[in-house]
Length: 138
Image (cartoon, rainbow, N blue to C red; front, side):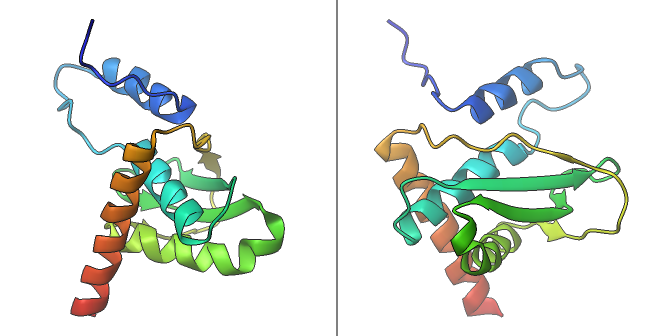
């Protein structure tokens, strides 16, 4: 029996697969936007008491690291006006630059929310702490 955590989230599976194909000159602990998408999704679900949430993150082909082009909420559409600013604030709090300059974009797969309660609590704590830190310094 292995002690390695097995993720049930398709986005995290995709991240693990992407990071496993890295060139030897790229550090394996390089920033993974997929984990941040999951954490923000889980934080939003807990913060706004949502059963499901479809957070859509886009990036320009020239953006790397902690740069993204746009954040959208596809479900629940009727809460997008409230949720998009919260998601934007969360991404900025964890160090992202959000800038859409009109060029072509690609979208990340959405987090399907299939995480353990422990993972959800970790994500909530991480995002909440970042937001509080940003508020304290800003």
